[in-house]
Length: 289
Image (tube, rainbow, N blue to C red; front, top):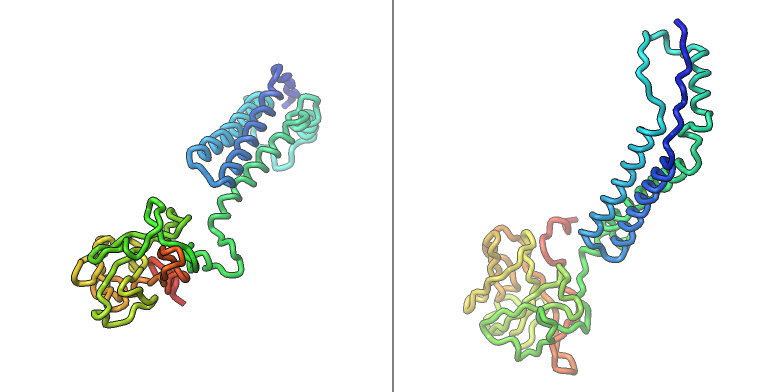
C-alpha cells in the first residue's frame, strides 16, 4: 500500500502572535494572583486573576492544537510497533519543517513562562499552612496579641478604665491595635472577691477578672453572663463556667477552664494586660501532648 506524505498546511497569519499573547496573559494572571495574595489577599481579585491565568493558558493551547498541529483522517491497519521507514521519514519531515509547531519561535518559551508562573503562584497559598516560626510549629496557636502593656479596649477601640466595668455586666474587651484578632476576644466582669472558692488563675483587681471569650470546647463565643451566679454560658453546646471557681467548667462538654488574662491599672489610669492568657484560648484538641 503506497503512502503519500500529507501536505503541511501553512498556518493562518497571526496565529503565532495570538498564541503568545494568550500565554503571556496567563502568566500575567498568575503574577497578579501572587501579588494580590502577598499583599494580604482579596478573594474576588484572586479569583479574577486565576480565571485570567487559566483562561489564557486554555486559549493558547486550544489555538495551538487546532491551528498548528497537523491533523488528518488517515485510517490503516496496525502493522507492528515499529513505524515503517517511510512513516518515520514523514514524521521527521513534519517536525523539522519550517512551519512545525515545535520550531515556531516564541511559542514554547511563552508556554513555559505561563506554566512556570502558574506553578509559582500555586505555591503562595502554601504559606498559609506554615507557621512563621518554623522551629515551633504551634507557636502561632499558643500565643495571642495580648502582651504586657497592651491596653484593654472596646470593639470601637476605646480604652477602658476599671470604672467602665460596672457590677453585674460582662464587657467585651480586645487588645489595642488588634481588635480583629480571632483568638484575642475576652470579657471583663466585676465579682465579689469574698465569693471566690478558687482564686482566679490570672489574679483579679478588687474582684475584676478577665477571661477569654472563646469556649474551650469548640471555640464558640461565651456570650451569656448569669448575674448573681457568677457563671457564663456558651449557647452553642450549653457549656457553663463558674467564674467564682477560676472559670472551671461545671456543665456541658467543655473540659478546660476559660483562660484568664492578667491585668493591671496603668499609669494613665487605663486597664492593661501584664501578659498573655494563662492558657491557649479556644478549643483544646490541638494542644494535647
